[in-house]
Image 1 (cartoon, rainbow, N blue to C red):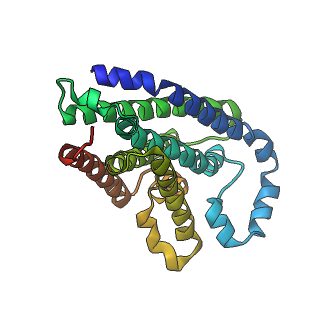
Image 2: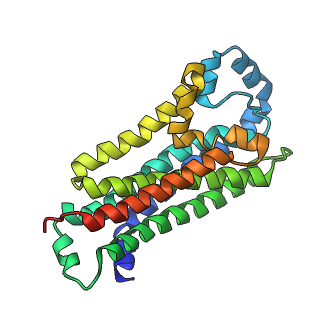
Image 3: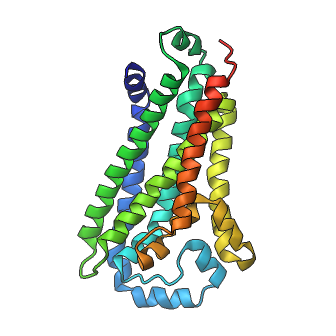
Length: 266
């Protein structure tokens, strides 16, 4: 518990900065809905004349700018991208910093097991990601209610999209957590972590702009929670949900096993 509370304090500032930025970005984009919905016909006509590949890459296929949840589905992938960057930075830094900052010898001198260290730090990571999403979901809901006007929407679809966003962040945090067991230098870890998120994001775009690359959708968490599909079916497809759960479980278990067997230089 002491380690958990210590990590909460150490990572509080980073959490507050990212939370404020993400909430403001999401709310400000949603605030554009009333003006855009008034010109929905013009936007629809513009989209009809745009290349299909470009629309697919932007997630603007079959979007009605007169519907608030459709507009939300256009906004949320960008918020998910930056929230995932925060998640992997948090997950990769919270464990590796002890070795990078040469404080691991002090921590291991305490009457705690390596597993308890991992549990405390992973719990802190999950706590902050969960809290971020609670605040973000609340802000998005209030913003949608404020700007939707006469546009109706499915609350169930909204919540499922939001849940999917949380699961994607959890997956990236778990990937970063496992990665930090093997790479402890922040100068190396930060660009690798960023590259993983951006790389999978561009793979997601590639999987939808070309039918030949459709198989790539199974290799990017960003395609597991396609907002347009969720709005249409009001569920996350079983195969994607299964992959997400397996990814989180595998990465987490791998971090525990690897850290317990790791030869740590104090």
